[in-house]
Length: 86
Image (tube, rainbow, N blue to C red; front, side):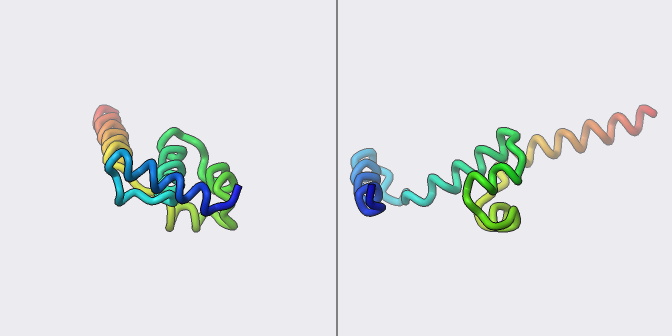
């Protein structure tokens, strides 16, 4: 299927639901971030995206969500509290 066919269909759908600022490529970023958040290892995500290196995946596509930051902070706090108990 030609890229323009998909892109034009996506644009019409996005306009119909009132989210004109969303572009088709945004779905790629969302997919990659969601896969990382779900626990898929970065090498697998990078290969699924067709990137030449994991650096491209991490530097360009992956986003640190608030949920991911909160989980990291919680892990750090738990580790700190455990070290104080010892």
